[in-house]
Amino acid sequence: MRDVAVIGIGMHPWGRFPDKTFVDLGVHAVREALDDAGLKWTDIPAAVAGLYAWGSTTGLSAGTSLAARLGETGIPFTNVFNMSATATSVFRSAYQVVASGEEDMCLAVGFDVSPEGFFGPIGKPDPTDTDYLRFKMVGVTNPGYWAMEARKRMELHGTTERHLALAKVAASQHGSLNPRALYRKVFTEEEVLASPLVADPLRLYEICATRDGAAAAIVCSMDVARRYTSTPIRVAAVALASALHGDPTLKLGTLCASVGEDVPLLSDSYTSARRAYEMAGIGPEDLDFVEVPDNSSWHYLQYIETMGLCEPGEADHMLEKGETLIGARMPVCPSGGASSFGEAVSAQGLLQIYELVTQLRGAAGARQVEGARVGMSQTYGQLGNASAAILTV
Amino acid sequence: MAVGTVALPEGIQLPGQLKDVDHDALAVGMPVRVVVDTLFVDDDGGEALSWWFEPA
Image (cartoon, rainbow over all chains, first blue to last red; front, side, top):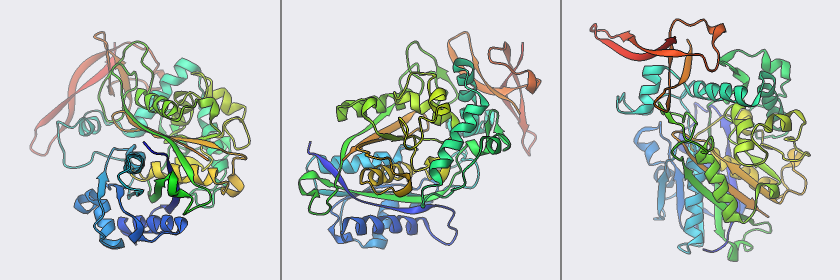
């Protein structure tokens, strides 16, 4: 496999855009990435797109729909869906196109429009679909799952409601410094704790919003990357993993957990992170910052441990001591994370890549992690399917 | 409404709605039993059943 670098990134801001189609969002992100790399659409020899699962037939062929707008050039366009691991899976596929030598360059793009409110089951009512059944038979929404995990964590590690609030405070401090974040208000602990309970113990400001957005990255072989940019960002690892039997997590969209011995919580995420460390030949101690899937305050705390940045139960103390802030030991979500952007499922992993590249270029302005040389992103996903990426200068 | 994850003696854990519980008295580790009860009645009078947990 050859070395691969990111040479262009682009995004459409996260939010609600009733006057735009989902393809408009993707076109915006791709054009920005092309401009960033100094390329034209006709220079792109291959592309992979995250599909828009709520968007009917056009959404299911998202990339092909995008090609129809940007210009039909005959390139291979793969449409990928992998729940919340979608955009990083897209990035992984684009990486493989280049690393394998099939093409010297490949576009990765994810674009998504979220339904209003809580996510619900996709498609027609289907009693054989566990995701349909969990809504219909138990009435448990995604924050309901996260609340149950948060309760387990509180029992196991002594995490308090204050810790959950502090996670939002920390993320909001970073989001306030990011001109492209959707939510830029700095929250106080008191404000978070005064927000309504959604799924006890999780409060409104501790759960990310569902929003629309798009992000894109152009990867190319390291051999030719310097033709396009003076700061190619190396893809040191991009890994994918599904869950292990015996995982104690009540996985999103499932109705049971078969709890085994010595299997880590979020085993899919745990494995994808370890696989990424192995591929990059580094360990968590070598990271300068991370983008975690902070869908809720529980995720923020749990992923610090799942990614091996501290021992189980220690994330609460890291947070209390301010060690997850920019300028401290391990900045978590310098972008502001999903907490400051909202979640657009098929684009979120590429938003993380966007932040990794921006930080590693030293172009993150007020939220710059000084001297950042190694950054890592991690996703969380339905049924236990997760991805991780490590980028380096 | 209250939803909880219950560890069954068979070794699996599953979520379900909790029935007839005082929300303030909910605690990790509290014993519950499985009951089957009406979830809803559809427009044609058909009854949908589901599993619930109630304090044991």
